[in-house]
Length: 401
Image (cartoon, rainbow, N blue to C red; front, side, top):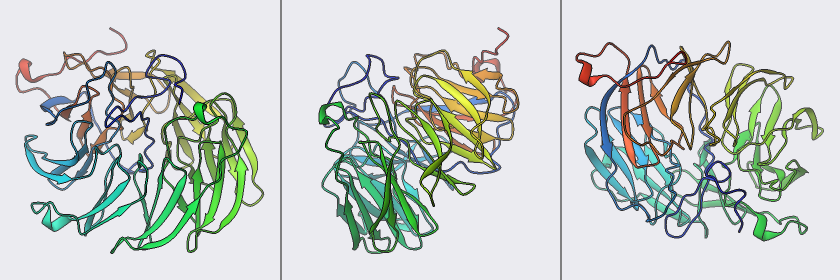
């Protein structure tokens, strides 16, 4: 395996149990989320555990908020950590076979967790204190993305180019698809990644390291078609496909980004930019964070670019989160930023007063609350509102300063 370039922007390093990792996250943006004004720091907690002893470390697992809890994976723990959102205290630890590098998937009944040993575990949401999975499934290779749940079936992928469909209630295998890589692709140039499946209209869309997008039948896993998308030195499809407006939007790590007609497999539009993290969709707007630190607002129908905001960090931009006051993004070599959705102007930057070493994972937004995990392994809880005392306020840097 080779790593393009020398910075974390080329390939975020998840070094746990000897693994390298850049994780896309397929979880969609929650419509109507809001973040008003410059937030205050409520609390911060260092995640418990022993992180890998490496010069460069990232924490790619996005936190997830549900009720009074925050669920977060961490490179230093073989567990999904559960925190009390009121003060950040550890409420539970759900054991896994290896560190968790993706966001958990929560339903009214289960918490589904994938780990870097290749296991998928289902924990009962009403029995978190027992910390015993209702079922486990082993895929044979590391899983770096969240599963996708549709109509009682759990779809997931691993880094060995395998796709699984499991019964969400029991973990029973429904079907398995093994992708045959394009023979011309040199294995040593493949990036260590596997995007989660996207399911739409009875079809499962999955991208692979050879740059091919494959459409599978959701009920049987039979291949319907495949189309080469990725180009350049690293054609790997690391970011998951997004289905919007009748098009499948997909991009290669090096390039391009295309809006594909799934009926004809021909591009409706094309942009010469790379993709490494999931896109976000709001109506007909596509928010795209690139591996080189640029956030773009794109018309999902035509591919027209409304504006591009450069973080100036060179670090990969996380999956954007659309809020009522702006687009919230993080940089793997920078911090947390709020960008004006109409103009692309920077509204504020998170400066907590300590060395962040970047934020790789998508922040979690719940109304006026924001939760984010830094690459240093610190969980931050933020809230809007005036500071009760000067000491409680964050050092926010505005674009004018």
